[in-house]
Length: 406
Ligand SMILES: Nc1ncnc2c1ncn2[C@@H]1O[C@H](COP(=O)(O)OP(=O)(O)OP(=O)(O)O)[C@@H](O)[C@H]1O
Ligand SMILES: [Mg+2]
Image (tube, rainbow, N blue to C red; front, side, top):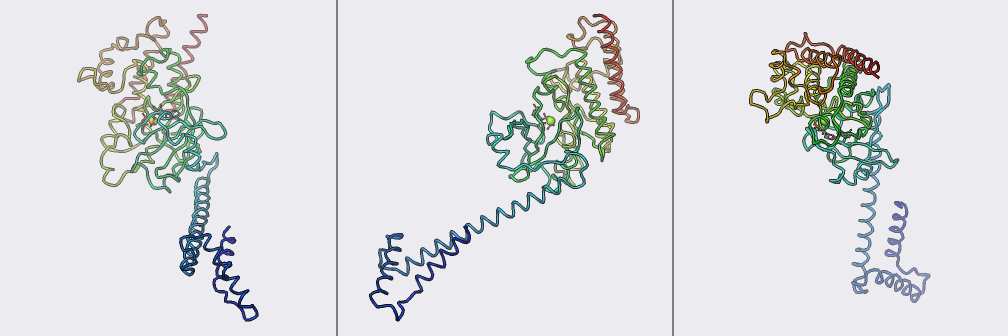
């Protein structure tokens, strides 16, 4: 195309600069000139032969303009290709497991029907989440950063590279990202059954979760977090463990979402001196020690997980302004309840009703486990692995008991 344009341009120049040669009869020369003028006039009737030079210059300028625009387009396309290749290289550098995919803006726009409202799954601290269907039919969740929320492209790519390698059944898989559009996008596996928060506190769209199912969800969550703390390289602290970050799949199995997301959120030097709730955790789930000295360890996640255990036991929200002023915070409320040994009074009636003595004992055991996770001194809290093992043990008791009944 570029070549063709150049030829056209040259041919035009030849025609213009051509004078009748001495071997040409004046008739022939005039004929040629007339023919060219006719052609040009047909292209540009406005000039209708009066100002042939002007017409020719206009055509030339048009051609030159077209040529330059096309050249710019080609250069842009070439540099985009290079950039995508460069980004792909960053994402696959030093990866031992699955490497992340660079999605094109076009692909994601198409999959979400240009971020149509009907595909909006929800929104949170980082931004909005859309359901998308890729060309191969697979369904994804596309998380779009809020304006001014994400770090620079290079940092996003580096974080995404680490997070994409994490592969555990208890964790939502990050498939890749798209850094081509105005705002960076994270592309996740789609988990179809909403969040634990929705199941515990939402409008009753689903049957209440049984005690055994709650235990399984807790164990799977703990297992996923233990993996992040002990098996991921480098270790990953979630920093925002809460029931709305525990997604449920078609079998109501738990998948923890948004691990490491807070590292993708921009925190300037000045902002580092205070807690940004969307970036560093959510009110009601925050480890008080972290709040005090801003030192982040795996035990901050253990604390937040303790709050999720309380939610599973009581079906009460971590923060609820409908409760009495002194009980707005679930942890504060439950500490008073447990100190008075009144745990059973606040257990969700649905799991309490009809529970056997053994099941009641397991409810108490989980209450104690939650209290251990919520210990104010982090060194007294169990590790996530210990929590996961304890829950597995409790599940064994409940299933063993249920099997013996039937
Ligand atoms: N991978 C996913 N698959 C299906 N739905 C998802 C997925 N990720 C998020 N969602 C939906 O999008 C909603 C918003 O998620 P988002 O993580 O942005 O908000 P949040 O969890 O409430 O807050 P935060 O930003 O603090 O994590 C969730 O409540 C969930 O219903
Ligand atoms: Mg979330």
